[in-house]
Image (cartoon, rainbow over all chains, first blue to last red):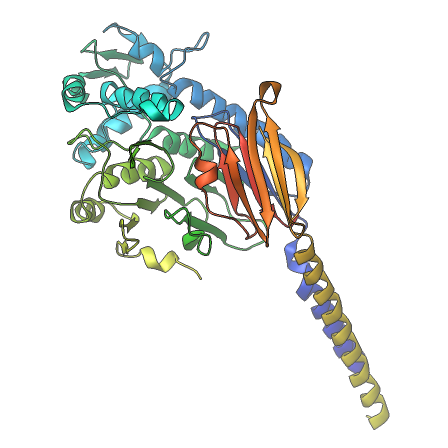
Length: 346
Length: 117
């Protein structure tokens, strides 16, 4: 009897400290080749070889979506968004991945009262050019004038994007309209790739495309995933994360912020999220984080909510199920939608 | 049950317990000592520094080594002191010290990561 007790204690002690970690290990891979941002793949695998092999597959999918949704570059044999933008009103035959993204974006245009508008390319490309120039020539950096922006804004009517799902074609009924899917494409692609990963049995992973975090399956060591939301006050090294969340299988967390992509004119920072109503960078928040299952929805909502008041944002959240939001004001104050706090861990 | 045997068992349990605690403590200490600052350039791990040794290094990358980021490890914190990238977001980034924290320089395809692997 005593021997059995002793043995049990020994076994408990041994397994208590090393047993539950199983054999899997955490691996991380960074890539800069997709969506003009950094993509981080984190996964639990038995060996580095297994992880690398799965990363190759994930990167092949990333490359595919990156090429399809690229508005700056043409690729051989690919009819992508850049091709549509250059089509001068001709119908372009495209892959279903494009028509599906555009359809979904049109739907979300209505949900967000026009704050997510993928037809805003003409306006956004002006800001893009001014930002690129301003970063390269800081002493000559300037802000586009309202007249120029308003002229471009005449060609942002989303109803002029004509999608034929039967024929898989897209036609722009206004030859000066330009597509820009920066507010949704990363999240949408993350969601589609996550589905492919699950189907291929690649689970126990986190896919993070430039702040679009998508969880693909539970961790193999049985722990919940912990995801930190970066403190938008980028100098605060005591508090790198403004909030830490414990998340389950297949959740997605997307943060839109004014602190990562911007350029400076005089002593004012001009960030990249442009309010469709003012045509200038949105001013309400430091960052907006959206937590829900669909990463495409989370991406679109974080962009849209960034461009509207807390009150208006709250109204939209109330009409969508299982969407949780945290707004961070300029002074660092945090506002939460109902249910967000239950994910917070300390 | 004779008393001496019970005593022996208790001693055995005590020894096992303390041994396990010592092993666990060593494991934990090693984990802390093993903290490193990894520099990853264009997806490949290029450099790895001991977090406890203060240092300042110029990290060159890109074609003809034209890209430069100056990495400083000092008092248990790592940061980019200066860089010749256009946006300087890596320079503006907070100092990092906790496992898993990163500094990213997008234009130079560079990641600085605190790790204990």
